[in-house]
Image 1: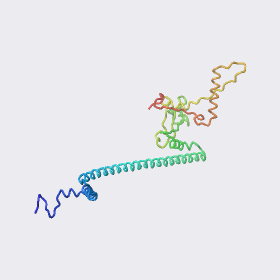
Image 2 (image 1 turned 45 degrees about the horizontal axis):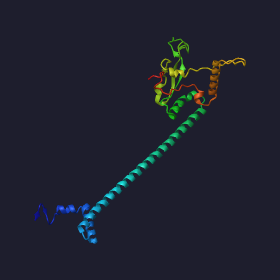
Image 3 (image 1 turned 135 degrees about the vertical axis):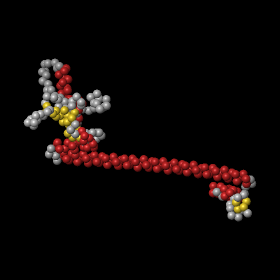
Image 4 (image 1 turned 60 degrees about the horizontal axis):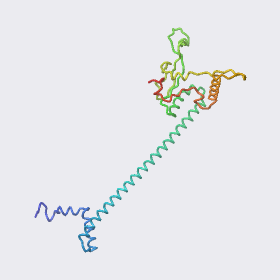
Length: 255
């Protein structure tokens, strides 16, 4: 006969179902078994202390698990850092190997070249790929063109009465749009300054009985410094160049 909505023969009482929960029944069973085994004078106090002790044990186990998880996570993070460092090292070695391979290939091509003008495009690509340069271009000074008659000669279109311009003839693969671009001196004074070669002035020898002029001494020192640079193996001393440390702050540069 149903009582309070459940059948005594077939249905389990809700309170019993709750007490049979593993989190409750397990600890109660252990407490009852321990109480029966110890046969304490005050079983209620013993039972309650056992339950409190069970809570402490459970909390300690939880803290141990938290620490274990933390250690495991730290080890995993450390291992990821080691793997990432090893990966970067491999990539760096591979990159350095590619640079050395590109360098060897480029210089081998120079050794076998009959006309170095044919290697200028390779030079642009080599410098671009093996340095941090954003763009690499090669240009030369050329005369500006002027209108000519149909029966004019081969070089009659060259205007030698006006300043020359820089015409880019080669560029790295990512800046092919720079080829044939022309830069006039008023537009690109910094680039044109590379072509302003200053020939050293030979100074006359100073007689022994003459007192050296300070200006002459300074010029002699400058000439000596220029000679030292000429004999230097540093590419910056051997070749005409212009170094711009801060492009954005340079007055001669514009964008």
